[in-house]
Amino acid sequence: MSERIAMGFHTCVDYELVWDTTVIEEQIKAFDIRADELRMDIEVDSERAIWIVCLAHFKEGIGGEAVPLEPEDWERFASHFEYKVTLGGTATRAAIILDGLGYETMLQTSCYNEHVKRLMPKSVRTLPGVDEEHNKVYPHIVLQCRGGVRIRGNDIDFVTPRENRIMVSRDFDSLNIPILPEKFGKMITDVDVFLLGCFSEVIDKEVLKGCMEKTRALLSHLKKDAVVVLEDGCYVRKEFRYYVHEQLASVIDVLSMNEDELQDYIGRRINILDPQAVKEVLENVRESTGVKTMIVHSAAWALAYGENASGMREALEGGSIAAATRFRMGDGFKVEDYEATKKIKDKAEGIRFCEELERMLGNKVCCIPSKDLSFVEHPTVVGLGDTFAGGLLTGLLH
Image (tube, rainbow, N blue to C red; front, side):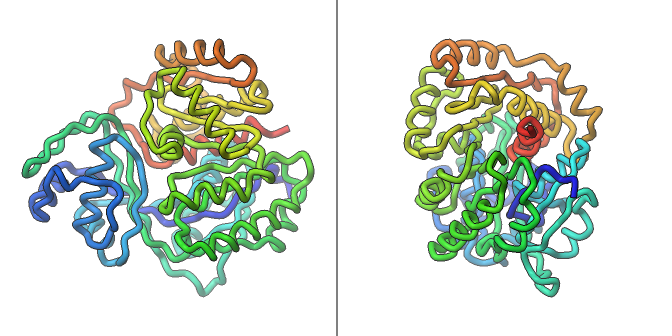
Protein backbone atom coordinates (compact mmCIF):
# COMPACT_ATOMS: atom_id res chain seq x y z
CA MET A 1 0.00 0.00 0.00
CA SER A 2 1.63 3.20 -1.19
CA GLU A 3 -1.28 5.60 -0.77
CA ARG A 4 -0.55 8.55 1.52
CA ILE A 5 -3.93 10.23 1.03
CA ALA A 6 -7.33 8.83 2.04
CA MET A 7 -10.77 10.32 1.57
CA GLY A 8 -14.45 9.80 2.30
CA PHE A 9 -17.31 9.56 1.86
CA HIS A 10 -19.45 11.37 -0.65
CA THR A 11 -19.73 9.94 -4.14
CA CYS A 12 -22.47 10.78 -6.60
CA VAL A 13 -23.33 10.71 -10.29
CA ASP A 14 -23.56 14.20 -11.76
CA TYR A 15 -25.60 15.18 -14.78
CA GLU A 16 -23.75 18.32 -15.87
CA LEU A 17 -26.31 20.28 -17.87
CA VAL A 18 -25.23 22.30 -20.89
CA TRP A 19 -26.32 25.92 -20.35
CA ASP A 20 -28.91 27.25 -22.78
CA THR A 21 -30.32 30.71 -22.07
CA THR A 22 -33.21 30.08 -24.47
CA VAL A 23 -34.35 27.09 -22.41
CA ILE A 24 -34.19 29.16 -19.21
CA GLU A 25 -36.28 31.95 -20.66
CA GLU A 26 -38.80 29.55 -22.20
CA GLN A 27 -39.38 27.89 -18.82
CA ILE A 28 -39.78 31.23 -17.04
CA LYS A 29 -42.70 31.88 -19.39
CA ALA A 30 -44.02 28.31 -19.35
CA PHE A 31 -44.26 28.37 -15.53
CA ASP A 32 -45.28 32.05 -15.45
CA ILE A 33 -42.54 32.88 -12.93
CA ARG A 34 -42.40 36.49 -11.72
CA ALA A 35 -39.52 38.56 -10.34
CA ASP A 36 -41.04 38.94 -6.86
CA GLU A 37 -41.16 35.14 -6.49
CA LEU A 38 -37.39 34.60 -6.76
CA ARG A 39 -36.25 33.22 -3.41
CA MET A 40 -33.63 30.70 -2.35
CA ASP A 41 -35.34 29.48 0.83
CA ILE A 42 -38.61 27.99 -0.45
CA GLU A 43 -39.66 24.34 -0.20
CA VAL A 44 -38.72 22.60 -3.45
CA ASP A 45 -42.04 20.82 -3.96
CA SER A 46 -42.38 21.07 -7.75
CA GLU A 47 -40.43 21.56 -10.96
CA ARG A 48 -41.58 25.19 -10.89
CA ALA A 49 -39.98 25.59 -7.46
CA ILE A 50 -36.69 24.24 -8.82
CA TRP A 51 -36.70 26.94 -11.51
CA ILE A 52 -37.48 29.64 -8.92
CA VAL A 53 -34.61 28.56 -6.64
CA CYS A 54 -32.16 28.32 -9.54
CA LEU A 55 -33.07 31.76 -10.86
CA ALA A 56 -32.76 33.28 -7.38
CA HIS A 57 -29.26 31.86 -6.97
CA PHE A 58 -28.12 33.02 -10.40
CA LYS A 59 -29.52 36.51 -9.83
CA GLU A 60 -27.49 36.86 -6.62
CA GLY A 61 -24.40 35.12 -8.01
CA ILE A 62 -24.49 32.50 -5.25
CA GLY A 63 -23.91 28.76 -5.59
CA GLY A 64 -26.17 26.38 -3.73
CA GLU A 65 -28.01 23.08 -3.42
CA ALA A 66 -31.70 22.16 -3.60
CA VAL A 67 -33.36 18.91 -2.48
CA PRO A 68 -36.70 18.37 -4.27
CA LEU A 69 -39.42 16.36 -2.58
CA GLU A 70 -40.10 14.22 -5.66
CA PRO A 71 -37.51 12.67 -8.03
CA GLU A 72 -39.80 13.18 -11.02
CA ASP A 73 -39.43 16.94 -10.62
CA TRP A 74 -35.65 17.02 -11.03
CA GLU A 75 -35.80 14.47 -13.84
CA ARG A 76 -38.22 16.71 -15.77
CA PHE A 77 -35.99 19.70 -15.01
CA ALA A 78 -32.95 17.92 -16.43
CA SER A 79 -34.83 16.73 -19.51
CA HIS A 80 -34.91 20.28 -20.92
CA PHE A 81 -31.12 20.27 -21.36
CA GLU A 82 -28.35 18.25 -22.95
CA TYR A 83 -25.94 16.90 -20.32
CA LYS A 84 -22.86 14.78 -19.72
CA VAL A 85 -22.43 12.19 -16.96
CA THR A 86 -19.55 12.65 -14.51
CA LEU A 87 -18.68 11.68 -10.94
CA GLY A 88 -19.10 14.20 -8.14
CA GLY A 89 -18.80 14.54 -4.41
CA THR A 90 -15.91 16.38 -2.77
CA ALA A 91 -13.81 13.33 -1.90
CA THR A 92 -14.48 11.60 -5.21
CA ARG A 93 -13.72 14.55 -7.46
CA ALA A 94 -10.62 15.32 -5.38
CA ALA A 95 -9.44 11.73 -5.93
CA ILE A 96 -9.95 12.09 -9.69
CA ILE A 97 -7.98 15.36 -9.72
CA LEU A 98 -5.14 13.76 -7.75
CA ASP A 99 -5.03 10.89 -10.23
CA GLY A 100 -4.37 13.43 -12.98
CA LEU A 101 -1.54 14.90 -10.90
CA GLY A 102 0.05 11.49 -10.35
CA TYR A 103 -1.10 10.65 -6.80
CA GLU A 104 -2.59 7.35 -5.67
CA THR A 105 -5.40 7.60 -3.13
CA MET A 106 -7.88 5.57 -1.08
CA LEU A 107 -11.60 6.38 -1.08
CA GLN A 108 -14.65 5.02 0.70
CA THR A 109 -17.63 5.76 -1.53
CA SER A 110 -21.26 6.38 -0.58
CA CYS A 111 -22.60 4.68 -3.73
CA TYR A 112 -21.35 2.09 -6.18
CA ASN A 113 -23.02 1.76 -9.56
CA GLU A 114 -22.22 1.38 -13.26
CA HIS A 115 -21.00 4.97 -13.57
CA VAL A 116 -18.70 4.73 -10.52
CA LYS A 117 -17.19 1.52 -11.87
CA ARG A 118 -16.70 3.04 -15.32
CA LEU A 119 -15.42 6.51 -14.41
CA MET A 120 -13.35 5.97 -11.26
CA PRO A 121 -9.59 6.05 -12.07
CA LYS A 122 -7.67 2.82 -11.50
CA SER A 123 -5.24 4.65 -9.19
CA VAL A 124 -8.04 5.17 -6.64
CA ARG A 125 -8.29 2.18 -4.29
CA THR A 126 -12.03 2.16 -3.69
CA LEU A 127 -13.97 0.70 -0.78
CA PRO A 128 -17.69 0.67 -1.69
CA GLY A 129 -19.87 1.91 1.14
CA VAL A 130 -22.80 -0.19 -0.13
CA ASP A 131 -23.33 -3.77 -1.26
CA GLU A 132 -22.79 -4.73 -4.90
CA GLU A 133 -26.52 -5.20 -5.50
CA HIS A 134 -27.24 -1.65 -4.29
CA ASN A 135 -26.47 -0.06 -7.65
CA LYS A 136 -29.32 2.38 -8.28
CA VAL A 137 -28.33 5.77 -9.70
CA TYR A 138 -29.63 8.92 -8.01
CA PRO A 139 -28.37 11.67 -10.33
CA HIS A 140 -27.25 15.08 -9.10
CA ILE A 141 -28.39 17.72 -11.57
CA VAL A 142 -25.73 20.42 -11.95
CA LEU A 143 -26.51 23.65 -13.78
CA GLN A 144 -23.62 26.07 -14.16
CA CYS A 145 -23.87 29.61 -15.48
CA ARG A 146 -21.26 32.08 -16.72
CA GLY A 147 -21.08 35.62 -15.38
CA GLY A 148 -22.54 38.41 -17.50
CA VAL A 149 -25.44 36.35 -18.89
CA ARG A 150 -28.68 38.28 -19.35
CA ILE A 151 -31.85 36.37 -18.41
CA ARG A 152 -35.24 37.78 -19.44
CA GLY A 153 -38.78 36.49 -19.18
CA ASN A 154 -42.06 38.06 -18.02
CA ASP A 155 -40.94 40.86 -15.65
CA ILE A 156 -37.65 39.07 -14.84
CA ASP A 157 -34.61 40.83 -16.32
CA PHE A 158 -31.15 40.51 -14.75
CA VAL A 159 -27.52 39.90 -15.65
CA THR A 160 -25.69 37.20 -13.68
CA PRO A 161 -23.03 38.96 -11.55
CA ARG A 162 -20.56 36.07 -11.70
CA GLU A 163 -20.12 32.48 -12.80
CA ASN A 164 -21.62 29.91 -10.45
CA ARG A 165 -23.57 26.68 -10.20
CA ILE A 166 -26.54 25.12 -8.44
CA MET A 167 -27.01 21.41 -7.70
CA VAL A 168 -30.40 19.69 -7.52
CA SER A 169 -30.83 16.16 -6.16
CA ARG A 170 -32.61 13.84 -3.80
CA ASP A 171 -30.01 11.11 -3.47
CA PHE A 172 -30.84 8.27 -1.06
CA ASP A 173 -27.16 7.40 -0.67
CA SER A 174 -26.25 11.02 0.11
CA LEU A 175 -29.18 11.42 2.50
CA ASN A 176 -27.98 8.31 4.38
CA ILE A 177 -24.21 8.42 3.95
CA PRO A 178 -22.75 4.98 4.72
CA ILE A 179 -19.55 5.01 6.79
CA LEU A 180 -17.48 1.89 7.50
CA PRO A 181 -15.29 2.84 10.49
CA GLU A 182 -13.75 -0.58 11.12
CA LYS A 183 -13.27 -1.80 7.56
CA PHE A 184 -12.01 1.53 6.21
CA GLY A 185 -10.21 2.26 9.47
CA LYS A 186 -7.91 -0.73 8.93
CA MET A 187 -6.96 0.68 5.52
CA ILE A 188 -5.98 4.20 6.65
CA THR A 189 -3.61 3.56 9.57
CA ASP A 190 -0.53 4.75 7.66
CA VAL A 191 -1.86 7.67 5.59
CA ASP A 192 -0.55 11.21 6.09
CA VAL A 193 -3.64 13.17 5.05
CA PHE A 194 -7.37 12.47 5.28
CA LEU A 195 -9.97 14.53 3.41
CA LEU A 196 -13.43 14.45 4.90
CA GLY A 197 -16.29 15.62 2.69
CA CYS A 198 -19.13 17.50 4.32
CA PHE A 199 -22.55 16.12 5.28
CA SER A 200 -24.58 18.89 3.69
CA GLU A 201 -27.24 16.68 2.10
CA VAL A 202 -28.18 14.79 5.26
CA ILE A 203 -31.58 16.07 6.44
CA ASP A 204 -32.39 13.59 9.24
CA LYS A 205 -30.90 14.38 12.66
CA GLU A 206 -30.62 10.74 13.76
CA VAL A 207 -28.79 9.84 10.54
CA LEU A 208 -26.40 12.74 11.11
CA LYS A 209 -25.76 11.70 14.72
CA GLY A 210 -24.80 8.26 13.48
CA CYS A 211 -22.50 9.77 10.87
CA MET A 212 -20.70 11.79 13.53
CA GLU A 213 -20.18 8.76 15.78
CA LYS A 214 -18.86 6.65 12.91
CA THR A 215 -16.63 9.45 11.62
CA ARG A 216 -14.97 9.93 15.00
CA ALA A 217 -14.49 6.15 15.27
CA LEU A 218 -12.95 6.05 11.80
CA LEU A 219 -10.55 8.94 12.42
CA SER A 220 -9.30 7.28 15.60
CA HIS A 221 -7.51 4.76 13.36
CA LEU A 222 -5.25 7.46 11.90
CA LYS A 223 -1.70 7.91 13.14
CA LYS A 224 -1.17 10.78 15.54
CA ASP A 225 0.46 13.21 13.09
CA ALA A 226 -1.97 12.65 10.20
CA VAL A 227 -3.67 15.85 9.01
CA VAL A 228 -7.48 15.80 8.77
CA VAL A 229 -9.22 18.31 6.50
CA LEU A 230 -12.98 18.85 6.54
CA GLU A 231 -14.18 20.51 3.33
CA ASP A 232 -17.29 22.43 4.35
CA GLY A 233 -20.49 23.15 2.43
CA CYS A 234 -23.77 25.07 2.45
CA TYR A 235 -26.12 22.71 4.28
CA VAL A 236 -29.71 22.00 3.27
CA ARG A 237 -30.52 22.29 6.99
CA LYS A 238 -28.29 25.12 8.15
CA GLU A 239 -28.39 24.18 11.84
CA PHE A 240 -26.81 20.82 10.96
CA ARG A 241 -23.67 22.62 9.79
CA TYR A 242 -23.09 24.07 13.25
CA TYR A 243 -23.73 20.65 14.78
CA VAL A 244 -21.14 18.99 12.51
CA HIS A 245 -18.53 21.60 13.44
CA GLU A 246 -19.26 21.09 17.13
CA GLN A 247 -19.00 17.31 16.84
CA LEU A 248 -15.81 17.22 14.75
CA ALA A 249 -13.80 20.28 15.84
CA SER A 250 -11.67 18.22 18.22
CA VAL A 251 -10.73 15.59 15.61
CA ILE A 252 -10.01 17.73 12.55
CA ASP A 253 -7.02 19.98 11.90
CA VAL A 254 -8.38 22.15 9.09
CA LEU A 255 -11.85 23.41 8.20
CA SER A 256 -11.91 24.53 4.57
CA MET A 257 -14.71 26.49 2.88
CA ASN A 258 -15.31 28.78 -0.08
CA GLU A 259 -16.47 32.41 -0.01
CA ASP A 260 -20.16 31.50 -0.35
CA GLU A 261 -19.92 29.04 2.53
CA LEU A 262 -18.15 31.63 4.68
CA GLN A 263 -20.93 34.12 4.09
CA ASP A 264 -23.65 31.50 4.50
CA TYR A 265 -22.21 30.74 7.93
CA ILE A 266 -22.74 34.32 9.12
CA GLY A 267 -26.01 34.79 7.23
CA ARG A 268 -25.03 37.92 5.30
CA ARG A 269 -22.97 39.04 2.32
CA ILE A 270 -19.69 40.92 2.68
CA ASN A 271 -17.24 42.47 0.24
CA ILE A 272 -14.61 39.74 -0.07
CA LEU A 273 -12.07 42.33 -1.20
CA ASP A 274 -12.50 44.33 2.02
CA PRO A 275 -9.71 43.13 4.37
CA GLN A 276 -11.37 44.58 7.48
CA ALA A 277 -14.69 42.85 6.77
CA VAL A 278 -12.98 39.52 6.06
CA LYS A 279 -10.79 39.86 9.16
CA GLU A 280 -13.83 40.30 11.41
CA VAL A 281 -15.66 37.33 9.87
CA LEU A 282 -12.60 35.08 10.14
CA GLU A 283 -12.20 35.90 13.82
CA ASN A 284 -15.88 35.32 14.54
CA VAL A 285 -16.23 32.08 12.58
CA ARG A 286 -13.05 30.50 13.94
CA GLU A 287 -14.08 31.31 17.51
CA SER A 288 -17.57 29.94 16.88
CA THR A 289 -16.42 26.69 15.24
CA GLY A 290 -13.55 26.06 17.63
CA VAL A 291 -11.35 24.67 14.84
CA LYS A 292 -7.56 24.94 14.90
CA THR A 293 -7.14 26.32 11.40
CA MET A 294 -9.57 27.72 8.83
CA ILE A 295 -8.95 27.80 5.11
CA VAL A 296 -11.09 30.00 2.90
CA HIS A 297 -10.83 30.00 -0.90
CA SER A 298 -12.41 32.60 -3.15
CA ALA A 299 -12.27 33.85 -6.73
CA ALA A 300 -9.71 36.49 -5.70
CA TRP A 301 -7.59 34.84 -3.00
CA ALA A 302 -7.07 31.81 -0.75
CA LEU A 303 -6.08 32.03 2.89
CA ALA A 304 -5.33 30.06 6.03
CA TYR A 305 -6.15 31.55 9.43
CA GLY A 306 -5.30 30.20 12.88
CA GLU A 307 -2.73 27.71 14.13
CA ASN A 308 0.11 26.97 11.75
CA ALA A 309 -1.27 29.40 9.15
CA SER A 310 2.25 30.33 8.09
CA GLY A 311 2.96 26.69 7.24
CA MET A 312 0.00 26.47 4.84
CA ARG A 313 1.40 28.41 1.88
CA GLU A 314 2.35 25.34 -0.15
CA ALA A 315 -1.08 23.78 0.47
CA LEU A 316 -2.90 26.98 -0.50
CA GLU A 317 -0.88 27.23 -3.69
CA GLY A 318 -1.62 23.60 -4.54
CA GLY A 319 -5.35 24.11 -4.09
CA SER A 320 -5.48 27.45 -5.87
CA ILE A 321 -3.48 26.26 -8.89
CA ALA A 322 -5.58 23.09 -9.20
CA ALA A 323 -8.87 25.03 -9.06
CA ALA A 324 -7.60 27.60 -11.57
CA THR A 325 -6.55 24.81 -13.93
CA ARG A 326 -9.99 23.19 -13.78
CA PHE A 327 -11.63 26.60 -14.29
CA ARG A 328 -9.78 27.12 -17.57
CA MET A 329 -9.36 23.51 -18.78
CA GLY A 330 -12.38 21.60 -17.45
CA ASP A 331 -12.28 17.86 -16.76
CA GLY A 332 -9.24 15.71 -17.30
CA PHE A 333 -6.41 18.21 -16.93
CA LYS A 334 -2.90 16.84 -16.55
CA VAL A 335 0.33 17.82 -14.81
CA GLU A 336 1.50 19.93 -17.75
CA ASP A 337 -1.74 21.96 -17.61
CA TYR A 338 -1.27 22.44 -13.87
CA GLU A 339 2.32 23.60 -14.40
CA ALA A 340 1.21 26.03 -17.11
CA THR A 341 -1.32 27.60 -14.73
CA LYS A 342 1.50 28.51 -12.33
CA LYS A 343 2.85 30.93 -14.94
CA ILE A 344 -0.39 32.92 -15.24
CA LYS A 345 -0.22 36.31 -13.54
CA ASP A 346 -1.96 36.90 -10.22
CA LYS A 347 -5.06 39.06 -9.85
CA ALA A 348 -4.08 42.63 -8.95
CA GLU A 349 -6.97 43.00 -6.52
CA GLY A 350 -5.99 39.71 -4.88
CA ILE A 351 -2.43 40.89 -4.40
CA ARG A 352 -3.61 44.10 -2.72
CA PHE A 353 -6.05 42.22 -0.48
CA CYS A 354 -3.46 39.69 0.68
CA GLU A 355 -0.86 42.33 1.46
CA GLU A 356 -3.31 44.30 3.60
CA LEU A 357 -4.79 41.28 5.41
CA GLU A 358 -1.33 39.96 6.30
CA ARG A 359 -0.40 43.41 7.57
CA MET A 360 -3.49 43.36 9.82
CA LEU A 361 -3.24 39.78 11.11
CA GLY A 362 0.49 39.05 10.97
CA ASN A 363 1.50 35.40 11.38
CA LYS A 364 -2.09 34.38 12.19
CA VAL A 365 -2.83 34.38 8.47
CA CYS A 366 -1.27 33.24 5.21
CA CYS A 367 -2.93 34.68 2.10
CA ILE A 368 -2.17 34.14 -1.60
CA PRO A 369 -3.79 35.86 -4.61
CA SER A 370 -5.73 33.88 -7.20
CA LYS A 371 -4.72 33.73 -10.84
CA ASP A 372 -6.13 36.29 -13.28
CA LEU A 373 -8.41 34.13 -15.42
CA SER A 374 -10.37 36.94 -17.06
CA PHE A 375 -9.18 35.67 -20.47
CA VAL A 376 -11.05 32.34 -20.13
CA GLU A 377 -14.07 32.40 -22.44
CA HIS A 378 -15.73 29.13 -21.41
CA PRO A 379 -14.93 28.48 -17.74
CA THR A 380 -15.83 25.36 -15.77
CA VAL A 381 -17.37 26.30 -12.42
CA VAL A 382 -18.59 22.86 -11.33
CA GLY A 383 -16.29 21.17 -8.83
CA LEU A 384 -13.88 24.05 -8.19
CA GLY A 385 -14.09 23.60 -4.42
CA ASP A 386 -13.54 19.85 -4.74
CA THR A 387 -10.58 20.51 -7.02
CA PHE A 388 -9.17 23.04 -4.56
CA ALA A 389 -9.44 20.41 -1.83
CA GLY A 390 -7.56 17.86 -3.93
CA GLY A 391 -4.74 20.28 -4.74
CA LEU A 392 -4.62 21.40 -1.11
CA LEU A 393 -3.82 17.87 0.06
CA THR A 394 -0.64 17.65 -2.00
CA GLY A 395 0.83 20.54 -0.02
CA LEU A 396 -0.01 18.88 3.31
CA LEU A 397 1.98 15.71 2.73
CA HIS A 398 4.92 15.43 5.16
